[in-house]
Length: 315
Image (cartoon, rainbow, N blue to C red; front, side, top):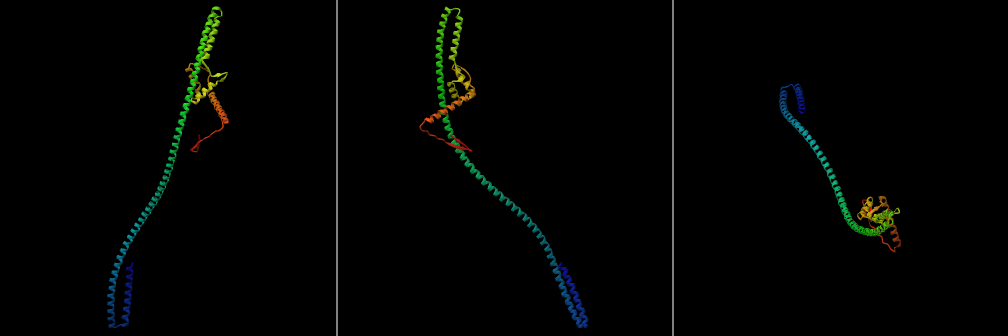
């Protein structure tokens, strides 16, 4: 663009020079003026050549500058592309840094939460260990109490067995007495046979019936007396339930123990009756406790309690 403007200026200067030359030639009209004008024209032409040379140099310089400008524009576009690329990279790195910061914050929060949970678990473990130690102590005490109760039940069972053996001995002694009476009755029957032949068959039947009745009385045990369970039967039932025997098998255990001693049982005991007998014993114990508390002069009470998962346990 700048070279075009310089050429127009050169043409305008030429026109002006020619006009001035024509005016001077017309005004002077002499040889000396023409020579002077010719010299001026030559000088003007020489200066015009110099100006043309300078113009050509400037145009070359302008073209070189234009090419350099194009190269700089290309570089500028490249630099803008690189700047955009680096900006995108910077945005990506900033986004990644923000994400890493957020992940770091989340990780630190999770670490804090895990540490809190760890502390909670450690405290819970301490509490559980303390509870387990207390439970172990309580279980040891319960085992000792159970051992004592078992020893007491064994003593009661041995006492009851001794009572049953004493009753068995009494029954055997009664059986021996009955046998002795039976022998005496046999002697009397032999005398009666000799005296009364016709009444011998009836007498033998009566003796056999009496003998069977005595044997039944000596070798049988009636659980009930006039439709009511005897006190001995009730005590044995309570002892068996206290020893851990199921209420369904109390009657079977009682009959088996008597059969092992050679005594047959008359009557049965249902689980409902066993429950009633145990309940009656409980009420009797409560009445006895109330009677003792009413008649005593002083009493001492003690209790202990603890809690586990919102449930209170008292002893």
